[in-house]
Length: 344
Image 1: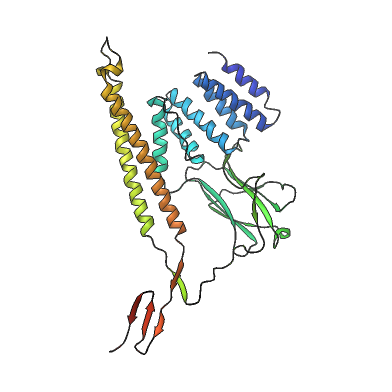
Image 2: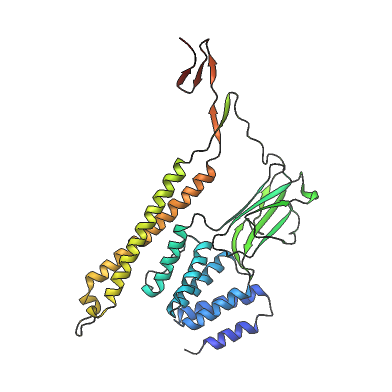
């Protein structure tokens, strides 16, 4: 198939127009090459589309999928895995077509295993600080995909503001301009790769997050007679152990699937006169079942580990009834229980 050079040349010729327009043309050409099962052209055009920059989060994820599929089809398993790691970071719910061959799905399963074993996922958010004069920007980037953060902030209803670049630090304390302090303001935050493609976002230029001057970041007022209670680590630990167990089970089924795949592709299923499926239908069934179990346990382990992290973060101090003195025996009431100290 000789279309690839022409498709790539057309994309390069249009690069002077605008990055977003050139990227969209290159992405469309990459999709066409993929539909034509032209994997070298798919890889080249998807890479060019990424390097053109300006892709939305959904477009960036799709381009990494095309890179992963085309790299795997050409035997570059490690590059395919890294591409799928990036795609799953952007879109954790991403699923590959079930009709794709084991050669392509194996790096995808390894990428799923990578994220299942990770204690955190790619995430980005910003919240007003307690003094209301700063934005606290938090970034989690375990796969080191983010090159910079881009923040747009301005008064509600004003024209869009110029983008401000922030370092890719885990926590950034951004000082609001004096003109925005004690006023309603809005912001949009994006994490970009080195080419300027969107990897994660909090708010959007067309739909920014609005922060009201009144009622933001108020201190918690506990009811009279209540004091904060310490954080409990029981739920995060239980979820984390369950997630590690599920991930380990996924690894076991992945290894079993590899063994079945070796048998399926081996000489035992290549006797002349019968199709491979007729000779080794039981192996084919075992291969498919092991793949389903591997994906299921990987996904379940990832969900449990993510839940463990969320439970750990969300387990902030909550109020607990303070002991109330009762009687001369120095007794205290704490919920339904009674505790007394002294001599009877």
